[in-house]
View 1 (tube, helix red, strand yellow):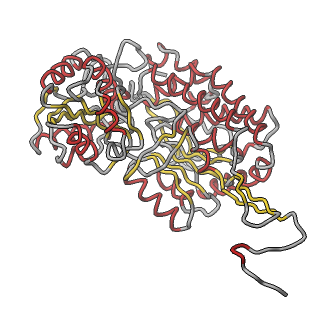
View 2 (view 1 turned 135 degrees about the vertical axis):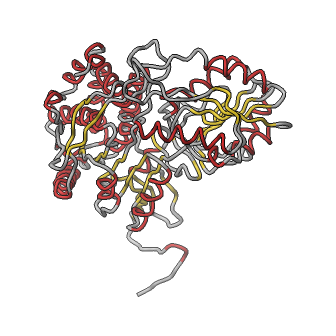
View 3 (view 1 turned 180 degrees about the vertical axis):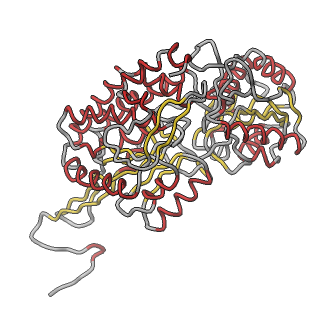
Length: 517
């Protein structure tokens, strides 16, 4: 255990999370039938080894699927409110373990401790939402055209839900899916990111304890580990009717094709290229707070991170000066130290992509306003700490059109009406999150209209990141079209069935068709 980990109580957190084998270098977690090669998890905070998790082989995967299939035959028969009670208990366990799990998220992923705690709070919130939902899985009643007939629709569980999650939210996105899937009567098989495997084991340990205490099948929640090859086992498996995948657009297209080839369902949460429009009527102080947090929070590794700032030319210099001044005040360092604003990138591969993006932006004509660079020296031994950068750019630059998972913010001007800014905002292939800063009601309403933002999330006077679980989360275009979390996102985890009941002694046919014998 490194000095940093000891100083911030990581060893105690790991013990509370049931990762007691950490010092031996292996941890598989409850219900993880893994016998393959080990994945080593190194913290981007200090480069220290956290632990190793064995990967799932094809034989291991078959054991998991058998366990999950058998569990589904029992779980689907449990009344939905009783399933909700299990999710409620899971939420209570998360409340008890919020601090240690938040620390693990921060240490393994690299986000600030406050963001780690916030991610666990998202898990708790979605559990609360799902508990209420367990009594509201409602269908509709329709009037039949045939006398003495009643029509209605109802929803039934799908079966096994496969979940592929990304490193940037190593626990919350899994909970968004599982909490809803569980109350819907589904069982889940989860492949967490190979970059944050210990978070996956910790979560599995928590829910496994709840299931054991309630004498329920362990296969209600299953864990598999490994790289994309393990994910392919699920995407190509007819026993998995729904695959929920979070990650890059490239990955999402591969998943979508594989699942569609077998006529399965996919829920895709892919890349974002999110912009904030700043109009002449914007509150500059609010704009700076929203833009800076959106751009540097989680070191720019959120799918909702602010990538582009589209500023009206009449206030461009004022906003530019305010943003660059704010960047000069950022503190970069150990994310477990709450005095710091920005932690590390996930690994050195991410650092290389960050450096390449800055080079590309300048080659295309971008002007660097706040230089980037890799930090070295005491406190930066992992090689994953970089400086948040700001570049003046054009929306048409190839690098601006792409999503770079790093703290790089592109500034650009617009002139004339807000429609011109909206055109720039929409002028990318991604369509996840968007925002406008304005006190002009007409501009705000135009932004939210059918001719406005084409993103799944459109905010007024708040930034692009920080979505609440009460609303459906997801985006359009190459972001994938999936919806998770709140609203009626639960419906994707169920199959719809239309029922017609004839309570007469005759058999009239629909559309007035006659068929006499």
